[in-house]
Amino acid sequence: MWAGRPEEEAMRAQVSVILPVHNAEPWLDECLRSVLQQDFEGSMELSVFNDASKDKSMAIIEKWKVKLEGSGILVVIGGHDSPSPRGVGYSKNQAIAQSSGSYLCFLDSDDVMMPQRVRLQLEAAVRHPTSHRVEQKQGQHHHGLQIVGCQVRREPPNSTERYTRWINRLAPGQLLMQVFTSNGPTVVMPTWFCSRAWFSHVGPFDEGGQGVPEDLLLFYNHLRKGGVRRVDQSLLLYRYHPSGATHSVLESTIWTHRVRFLEERALPHWATFTIWNAGKQGRRLYRSLTAEARRKVVAFCDVDENKIKKGFYCYEDSQEKPKPRVPILHFRAARPPFVICVKLDLTGGAFEDNLRSLHLQEGRDFLHFS
Image 1 (tube, one colour):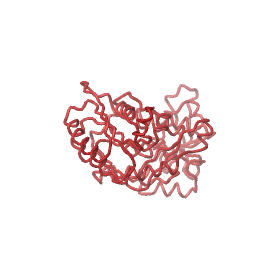
Image 2 (image 1 turned 90 degrees about the horizontal axis):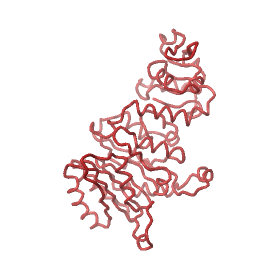
Image 3 (image 1 turned 135 degrees about the vertical axis):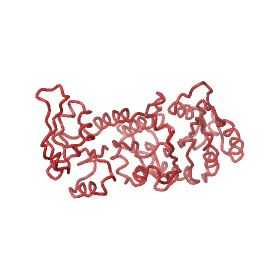
């Protein structure tokens, strides 16, 4: 954690914008202009860490350093020029370590902040500074036991439509309920805003480099100790492009982390449960569970008459004798709680209608996994 002499303490910024950079030349001008255009009137710094960029990123950063410091925003630049990059987790940790702000505002070099982002997220973080239950349980006093996110505008607009809708429309309670889905964190990392004290309590980011879902792992670690809020305004232009770092993480790696987190956080509260989807995804989840968690699965349920007619699913690869046979029921004949392995927004509303017809409570009676 940053600590300095009293005169340095006076210079300490309220908010540090954390910006890891690797070969970001096409987007950096727009990104850095959005830092300059913040309407926040408190003290702000930009902490940039250049992770072995081979393009003109550094020249662009140096040019903007003059403009930003001219308007009162301190700029701290770190980096290395080794032959290969050390990865996003390492870069973010370095950018945080060299920064001084009481609050951290995360930003990706290909994204653009709306002018009111820092002001509104800081207001939200200060307005909801703590969760007393967590504070008392841990016997510690951390201000800001929250990650504050925001809604986003996707660029290009028609990319990842279902995902963008999900990010922007989750109800406040769902920010904590829908954390097991394949969509990942319920508030996306480039929208994260939190106190430095809180980050030093739940961080740092995993530095394993390419192939490690560092955002997801930190988010899970955060959820073990704190809560999530979202400013319900679009404060970030969130760019999608196929070369994004996200695409280097194997789906199977993320799947494993998700299953373990579900087993750790949700399944201990249920004596038995039903997997909603007797197809490929539901069976894959069943096979991925520990033997202890598998024994809690009393049934699969579905709407597909062919699957229901089969009567049961037999886990052929099991070492157990006799091999487990799990009943397959119509969803109306099945007992909650459910772990739902049906993707939202893909059945023309039929799945959502079926779920609503059962009058269940999310969290208590069902959780989304797909």
